[in-house]
Image (cartoon, rainbow, N blue to C red):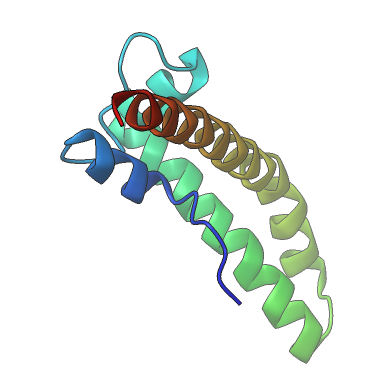
Length: 107
């Protein structure tokens, strides 16, 4: 089944950019903050991975007090990462639509 890709990396390539991590001034402020501070980017990504590792370990080995507490501690950062993914997808969709409109007008 063929489906259009809204991958932010593809959008960046279509625009001639080098990386989806180069967020301009017109982008969402939260994305600017996220990609502008490498320590924040690392922390959120690591917490997101840690959250899903906890879920995996709890499924196979049962929920211990430590794993459960760690999972709940990491949940807010994993939710933030999901929100950032949605914001990035929204920005990519808008940019792709603008590129498509521009291309259709030039035909």
